[in-house]
Structure formats: structure tokens, C-alpha cells
Amino acid sequence: MPRRVTGSPAKPAEREQQARGRAEIVSLRLQLRQKAKELAFFINTGKALTSTLELDKVLDIIMERARRLIPCERWSLLLVDENEGRRELTVRLAKGGKGVSSRARPIAWGQGPAGWVAQQARPLLIESRHLPLPSGLRSWKPPRSGFRSLLAVPIVNKRKTLGVLEMVNRADGRPFDTTDRDLLVQLMGQAAIAIERSQLYRRMAELTLTDDLTKLSNFRHLNQTLDVEIRRCIRYGAILSLIFLDLDYFKVVNDRYGHLMGSRVLVEVAELLIRSLRDVDIVSRYGGDEFVVILPETGLRTTQLITKRLHRAFQRHEFLAQEGLKLRVTASFGIAGFPDHARNKKDLIRLADQAMYEAKYGGRDRVCVARRQPPKERRERPRTPGLTAPLKTAARP
Image (cartoon, rainbow, N blue to C red; front, side, top):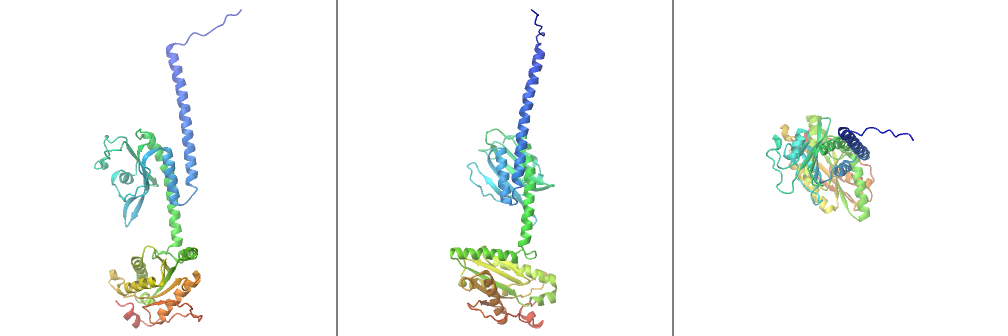
């Protein structure tokens, strides 16, 4: 019977090396499995973010994915808001410890952790309230209770800060670490592209619905809004009124002072209308020097009071005062109501327009209400008079 040949037993050092090798293989397999999970996560995130162009939905997706990636107790998603040259952060989504949405005031640029992250355009990791803070944050004090750690990451695309995602306290009680930071930075890279794409889409949509000069809604938006409002009136038995106004002798302003000054007058008219009307009222530039106001849930009596107030505001206002001209530019107003005068959008606009022209024919600078059975005769615009009359009554410096 042949003898079985066996190798000599491994030395302790060799056994230790083999054990380390097996442990490394197991560790590499776990790392590979984790990387595969992360890759799948980010691929699915990319698919979700490209599924919509609506900013609110994009923000919801970002927060859903962030909370799935790193569960935490409190979080907030803030976007940069540039208002009159001043940059600040506005909270768009937020959740407190009990899952209740918070309503925070805008955060100044550079203020607090989120403001610091936006200003520096780099992430902030505070692993404990007892650790030293960056120099720009030393005046900020973490809350004394309920605070363990904080992670805030900027949302940056092409060196432009779009917002900040801030997380407080991991859900499992551990402090945030550099792995969390790196994962969130990667996620916010995807988020930045999606947010900028959504914001660009919104700006393009606004351009198609907004008058470029006055920033009011344009004729297209007016028609869409009226369609919606009239359908609502029909469905719920509601009412609405329409004001059609046209500036008096506006051609004279253009001829005498130039089209640039005329454009500035139109901008001032838009601002005057916005200041004088309610938040629920919808102001549109119909075209040229004509404007339309939709007053939802407003009857004729109230509309007449509102229009008379507008009429007086025009009479008192000094246009182009900053240019030293102080012009008086009046307007003629026409009012029509739904369903008092019209049963559809086309007739409502037509009757308000006709009432406005009655104000023109009646001497301008006045308010007229549509007749329930308007005449069928062809409408003609009144002739533009010479310079003497309008400069005396409508464009007097």
C-alpha cells in the first residue's frame, strides 16, 4: 500500500498571512458589493431626476433619495434666491424631528452653517458640538440640546451655488462621517444638474407667458387664465369681472419724449396696477398700451369701486418723476362681468373692450361699464388729436 505524502504543516506566520489574505478577500467582496449598491442607487437617482422638469418634483426626489442614502432626524433643502442684487437662502423643503414641515425665514449669505456652505461652496462636517468650528462659523453656536452632528453640502454646478442640503443627527445615533459627506457630495452633483435644468425650463416657460417689458402676464397667459377661471365659474356658479384699460394719448408721449421714455411709462403703469390691486387679481399686458385685469369672485359693484380707485391712482401719479418729467398720463377703463354681461371668454373681452372705447368716445380719463346688449355696429378707434390737448390733460410735464 503506497504511503500518503503530505506537506509539512504551515508555520504560524504563514497561517496568519493566509488568514489576512482571506479577510482581505472578504473585505474586498463587501466593498465591491457596497459599491455596486451605490452605483445602482445613483443610476436610479439619475433616472428619477430626469423623469420631470418641474422644480418642486425635482426637489422632492432629491430629498427622498438623500434621506434614503443617509437617514437623519432633521433636514432642510435651501435654494439660493437673488433678490435685487442680494443673495440669500430660502428654505424650500424641511422636516423637523417629529416630521413636521418648518417655515423658516430666509438665511443671509454667509450666516450659520447653511449660509457658510453656500458662501464657501464647500461641504461642512461637524461631528460633535464640542469640536472647533471653521473660522467663519465661530460666532455660530450649536443648539445645547438635541444636537449631535451636522452635515451640510452645497449644490453647485459650473462654479455656481444653487442651494444647500443640510442634515442634523444621523437616525442611528452615530455622528456623520467623511463617507456620508462624500456620498452626499456625489448626490448633490446630480441634484445640481437637475435643479439647473428645471430652473432653465421654468424661465423658458415664463418667457412664453410673461411680457418681457413689464413682467406682467402676456396675452397668451391671459387667455389661458381666463379659460380656467370661466370653467371654474361655470362649474361652481362663481363670478368674475374684467377691467380693460387703455392709456390716453400714449402716442403723444412716444412722439414727444421718445420710445424709451414711453417704455418706462408702461413699466410704471404695470407697477401702479400691481400696487393698487389685490394679490388674487391677475394683471396682464394685452398689447401696446392696453392692459387687462381679471378679478376672480368679484361682482360688478365691487369692481366699479376698485376701478374708480385705479382711476384716481392714475390721476394722482406723476410718471417719469425720476427723469424729471413728472407727466400726467390718464387711462380709460371698461368693465364687464361674467355671467352678468357675457357667457364666454370671447364676449367678456369684447364687451370690456367696447366699454373702454365708450370711455374713450366720452372724453377719455373715465370709467364705463359694459351694456348687457351691446350694439353690433363696427367699432372704430377715435382719432389721435394734436399735441396741444394731450399735453394739457394727459402728458403734462
